[in-house]
Image: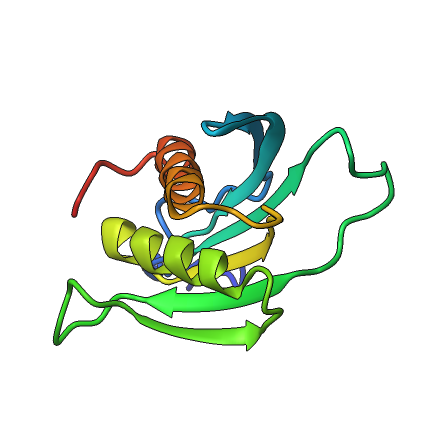
Length: 151
């Protein structure tokens, strides 16, 4: 006769084999065309998605807290993988374009949903400055996410 504490079979575990990174990775890099402006990234790699916060600082900004900025969600598009689906959850005109671009690129390259919070301020950037900022943010995010270039 079996004891109440014994069992004959072990139930399969539904626990994931790899746990998400709960500690965010942080990084600060100078922007290519604006050497006095620093881009700050905080990246949290979750099991099924990524959470990225971007902000910038320059010598003219005070040490006070930064504005919230825009918050964007992007996810891979199964019907057209080269064009991820994206929606703004909270938007400010000064940062929505940058946040949307970064979120779409990271969702496409990682093939995972991506949340991007962005309060990057360029002032009046040229096209080259903004493109260089997006490239720098994506390159550093991909390094920290540990994902290979997929797209």
